[in-house]
Image 1 (tube, rainbow, N blue to C red):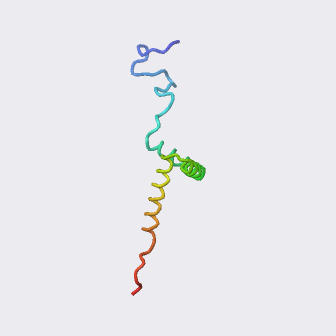
Image 2 (image 1 turned 30 degrees about the horizontal axis):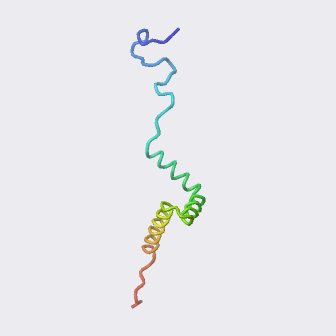
Length: 87
C-alpha cells in the first residue's frame, strides 16, 4: 500500500519516515569546533609545512607565519611581569 496524504490526514510523511533523512544540517559553530579539533590534532604538521613553504618563497605562508609570530610576541609581552627599577 502506497502512502498518500489524502488517506492519512494530518500526516506529512509515511509512518517511521523522517522528513529530513540526512539529519540536521551542521551549524557554523559545529563546523568551527570540528576545524579547531583538527587543527589541534595536526597543528605541528601544519606549522612545519607552513614554515617550509614560507622559506621556499610562498608569500601567503610567510605573511601567515609573520602574523602568528607577531601575535605570539604580543601575548608573551603581556604575560611577562613589568620590569621596573625595583624601588
